[in-house]
Length: 107
Image (cartoon, rainbow, N blue to C red; front, top):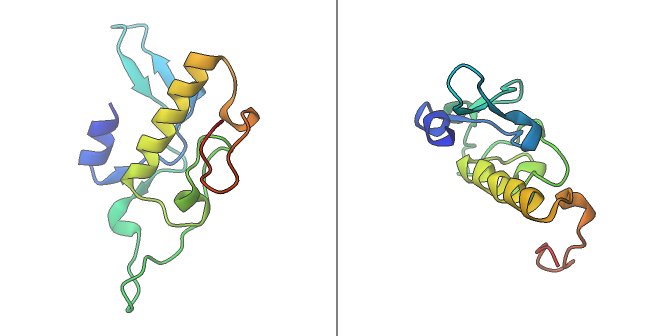
């Protein structure tokens, strides 16, 4: 499902457990809430080769540092999928798990 979003040149930007649903019609897992999604072509590059900052959209605990700094990329969604897995495996919201202040890795 995420591959389809990225092939469409888009980034979801707010992946979290409540935005992953199982469709009753056929039992397939689908993504919902594309309110914060962006086309990657809309992420502009400045004249010096850097990405132009964008408005920060996402949810604490699921959003990677580059997205929080206004520079999302498709890998930002992949990071959020990892955080969803942590939520499913631990039963804890990722933002409640202590982080290493230097590496931002969950402890």
